[in-house]
Image 1 (cartoon, rainbow, N blue to C red):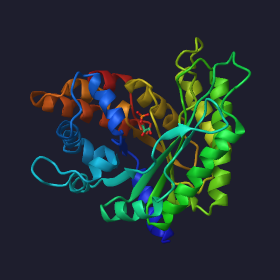
Image 2 (image 1 turned 180 degrees about the horizontal axis):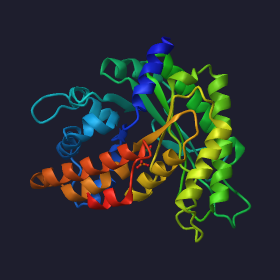
Image 3 (image 1 turned 180 degrees about the vertical axis):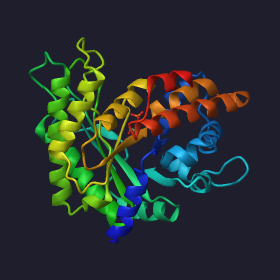
Image 4 (image 1 turned 60 degrees about the horizontal axis):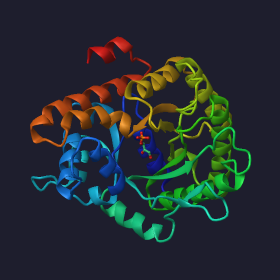
Length: 346
Ligand code: 13P
C-alpha cells in the first residue's frame, strides 16, 4: 500500500472550494428521481442526465473534486463516444465508484439493516481501478426508531457494530487496491427523534467506526469520512438553528474523529438545497478543527438541475445553469464564504 499516494488523493478530494458530486444513485434510486420529473429511466436518459452534469462548466473544474459513479456509469460512454470517466478526468475531477450492494435486513435485529457487498470485493476493486476509479464509497444506514418506542428501539449496539465492521473491512480492501475509501455511516434524518438523539447516535456510530478502522489496519491519512450532520428528525417539532446544528456537528466530530483524517465530506440526506449549503458554511465560519469540511452531496447538488432539465434536451442550458449555481454556492460554503444574498441572487 502506498499511503502517500492515498493521502494525496484524499487531500485532493477535499480541496477548499471543491467537494464531491454523488452521482451514484442505483438504478432503482435514479428511477425514483426521474419519476419526480415524469421521465422514464432508460439507459440513454440516465446517460444524458449524467453527461449533462459532467459537461457543466465552470462547476466541474472549479467546484467538483470527484464524482461518485454507479457501476453502469463507470462503463458508459457519452453520446459522442467519449467515456464518461474521461469527461470527468478532463475537468480535473477524480472518478470514484459506489461499491456496496445496498442495505439489507439484519438477521436477529428487526428494524435494522446491514450493508452488503464484501464478498468478491477485492476483484471488483481491481477492475474499478483499471476503469479509472481512485476512490470508492460504501454507505451504512443507521435508522433511529420513534422516540415513543421502547421495545425494539433502534439502533442497537449490535446493529451499529455489524455496519462499522463491514465499513472497516471495505476500507482495508480499498487501501490495498490503491483506492481511497469514503466511509459513510449515515444516521438517517427521517423520523420524529430530536437533535439530542441524533447527537448521541452519531457519536456512538463514529466511535464504533474509528475503533473498527483501527482494528482492521486502515490508515486514517488515506480515507475520507462521509457523515450526516447532527440534525433533528424531519418530523420532530423542535428544529435546531443552523448555529446549533453546526456547533453540535463540530463537537461530535471533535469527540470522535482523529486529526489524521484529511477531510470530512457531508452527505445532504434530504436537507433542502439551501439548508445543506448554509449548515456547511456555518461550520466553516466557526472553524477551529483539524480536518477540511466539505460536501459530498447527491440531492443537494442535483435537485434544482433535475427540475430544470425535466428530461428534455431543450432544457440543457437551464439545467447546467442550476448545477453551476449550486456547485458555486457549496464551493463557497466549503470555505465559509457563502451568503444568503448570493444564493438568492443566483
Ligand atoms: P445525498 O446527499 O442525496 O444524501 O446523497 C449522498 C450520498 O451519496 C448518500 O450515500
